[in-house]
Length: 443
Image (cartoon, rainbow, N blue to C red; front, side, top):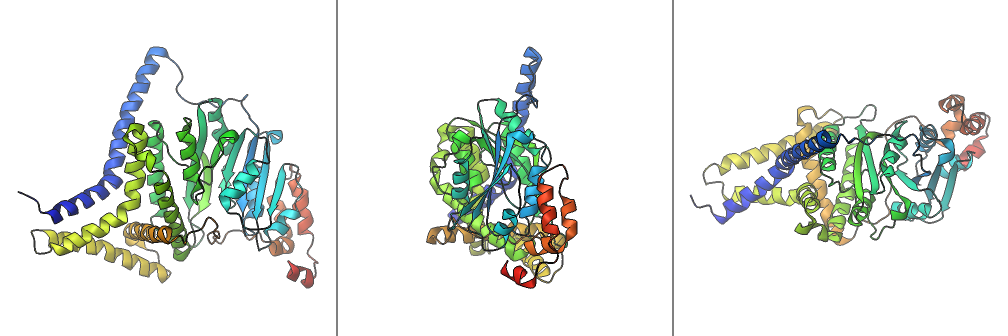
C-alpha cells in the first residue's frame, strides 16, 4: 500500500523518537558486546591486562577549580568535602573563583585559613567558563578537576579520575554524577532518567566515542584546557574540543559526585531551558562533528544528542500529521494515544503544583517537561536571550551554612576534620556567638 506524504512524515517522526530513546541504546549495546568480545579475544591471546589499574606511584599535581556565585548555603560544606578527599595533601590545591557574588560567600571564605586554598576575586561577573579559564592560568598543576559548589565528591573520586592520565593518550575524564532528591521533594522520574543517561555514557565509553562530560566532576590536562568557543554547557564543549584534538575522553562511573535535584518544579524548568539553549548553541557551533568521515563519533553525536535535541519538533510534527489524518485508518487512535500522554503529563504537573508526588504520572511529566524546555531553549537561543552569565539554580534545603548560621551555631566546627588546619578557622567562626546585631546586619 502506497503511503501518503503525511503518513511518511508521521512515521518518520515517530520512528526517529523511538530510535533515539530505544533503538539507539540497543544498537550501542550490540556494538559494545562485539567490542567486548574483541577485547576478550585479544586478552586470551596476549594475556595483557585490560582494566585501568590505580597506580600508587602516579599522583600528579591536581588543582580543583570551582566557579562560585552566591553559594553561601553550600560553600563551606564544599571546601570541607574537597579537603577531605583521599589525595596526597601536598599534591592538591583548591582554587575558588568568586564571580562577583552579592551574598556572604566572599565573607565566609575570607575567614578561612588553609594553605591549599586560594580564593580569586572577580569584581565583575565573568561567567563560569571565563572564571575557570582564568583560574587555570593561575596554577601549574598537571591535571585540572572542574566541579561545582553544590556537588559532593566521594572520598576516592580524585584518585579514580587521575589514574587514567597515566595513559598519555587520555585528555579528559568525566566522572559519574549521582542525582538525589532534596529532603521533602519529589524527584519524579529525574533520577531514573539520569541512570538511563549514565548507561548510555557507559556503553559509548566502551566504544571510545564519549563526547561530553559531567561539569560537576570533570578532569582534564591543563595544557589542553584552551576553550575555543564560549558555551554555557562547557562540560560538553570542552571535552568535545579535546576529543577533536585527537585525545581520548573517558567516562569513569567509579569517580562519583553527588548533587541534589533542584527542589522546585520552577527551578528544574529554568535549569532545563538554560541547558537547552546551550545545547543548540553547541549543535550549531559543531556541525562538523556530523561529518560521516568521523565514524562512530558522528554516529553517536547524531543518534544521542542531535535527535534528542530535535525531539520536540518531531513530536509536534507527528501530532499535527495525525490530527490531519484523523479520519484515516487508525490515526484517530494514534492521536488519542498522544493526547493521553500529554494529558498524563498535565495531571502530573498539577499534582506537583499542589505539593503532591507525581506518582504514576512521573514518566510522562518528565518526558514532556524536558521536551518543552528544549523547545523554549531553542527560541531563547534564536533571540540571543541566553547569556553566558546566569544565576545558580535554587539549592535544596540542606544544612544551612550561611555566615549568619555559622556564627550562631557553635556545633558547626564539629563538621570539619580535626586533622586539617581548616578546622581551627571554622572553630573561630563558631565562637563569635556574641557578635552584635549591627555586625550581623552589615554582613
